[in-house]
Image 1 (spheres, rainbow, N blue to C red):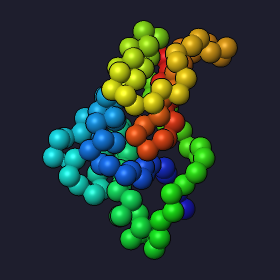
Image 2: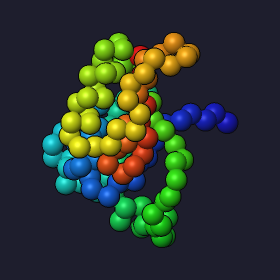
Image 3: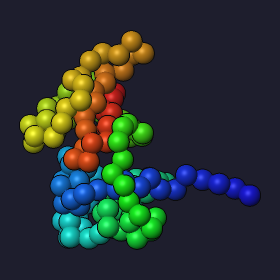
Length: 125
């Protein structure tokens, strides 16, 4: 039996706000998706899916607002300057910067932001 990671799902409170954030990261998401309850975006051989909380409540049978950090998405940028620019662009919108860009000891330019639902998103080059 073969197995392959095919999709990562993100539960969102406000679809438009979430999609606007991920558009800042460069994801090509059509504007008409803003009103949907479930949205999928192809990322190479992987899909990134967004589901409103009401959808997840139906799927799981219940929904409790999670607490704490559980998973992080990491986006590869073209350069250290691109990390800095994207961090600035995201934090200018009022979304939460978590850690300003720095040169990590492992050799990457790195920054961490929070999406509108509090998920930590790493930016690196």
